[in-house]
Amino acid sequence: MRATVGDQLVQHGRVVGQHDKVGEIVEVLGQEGNPPYRVRFEDGHEGVCSPGPDTEIRHRNTMTR
Image (cartoon, rainbow, N blue to C red):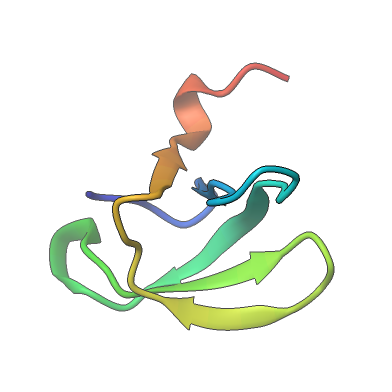
């Protein structure tokens, strides 16, 4: 998993009724785009994440708006 600043990190809900949690990667702390990442989520919360298997990276250059 590799990311750059501006990409989206999406943590998929694990149970029925739990929504996906979407955030913007504001800092890459690992080498060569690898985790961990500092992420600012839609609710304003910011934290350091080491994504698991329920997470995907949506690259800024491939997202449609």
